[in-house]
Image 1 (cartoon, rainbow, N blue to C red):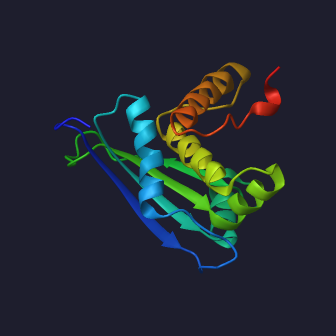
Image 2: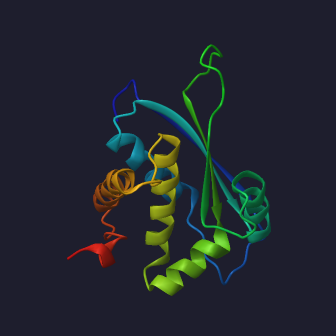
Length: 163
């Protein structure tokens, strides 16, 4: 990291800890966010990662996406006007659902930390305006995810799509 690089990853934990469901530590979450910032050549960025339970993410999913069910990750890009002076460019908020990510790792038979890393990378890429609403955009976003995860020594999460 150069002297001019500056990042802030704010971690908010809003769920009841459960010893049966391990969650990554702050330094691990930060390292995954920094991998995205580095890959996308961002020298300065701020993002909030909020870890929540199923009820909170279901409420947000219903309110903002009109889907009344829990989901793994939601991204809320910043809507702070450009003329507002900030110490760092604020990208937005990533909401990560602890029990959903845990269950997905079990269902996909992958290491839980790999699933967490993928969801952090995926969420931040959404804040950077990548999307998967059509096949072309999905291909671009998935290729970025694969490259960033590979830099973290994490296997391709879309391996089932490989030939």
